[in-house]
Image (tube, rainbow, N blue to C red):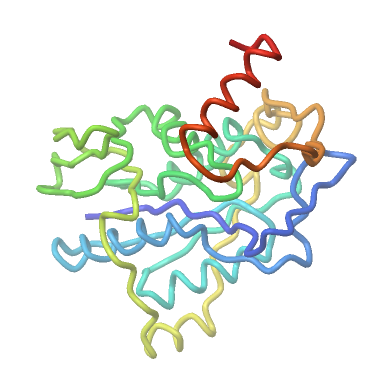
Length: 261
């Protein structure tokens, strides 16, 4: 079984800076890691390969520094890595990112299953996985907590919901986005670290994957960030102490005075 895992390199910091000119994240000079949810996707791909055989390839879109994230995936046991890197890709929203990744996956070819984390911690949209599935025109199962059965033609997955879970049967190829409950990612092995040390990913530019310039990067993104700002810190307020019934009565009276209730 040939599996492709979409991963993203995200800032490893709470001090996120925004470029005021483009309203996009400033990534240069910021420590980065593999998106934590994508680590579970990598681990699940490796477990499926160990069970069914085949190959695991990771793919990511970003600047040259994403090579370090790809090397980390190699150290975990991934077979190959592809980097989609071109200045034309910069500033892409989730739609343009999904489009670009789907072209890269098509170029890889012969893919039975595409995996990715449920969402990225720097955006929290959970849109790229489903978007890739749409561009590839394949079934998608989101928030997967368990792959119960799988072969080269079909799979059964447990999909997490707010109330519990759903059992979904699907044909392959398909896209699964996974949640952290699915497994526990392994640590890199010594052999893997040695391989990663000298590994260099294959790099594809926009022309290599046949991307339409109107659909990539900032110019090809239908979503535009108009303004980013930090909300003002709230001041005032009252801390109520003592008997809970008295506190509730004060809150209710205060809301009535302001004609809120």
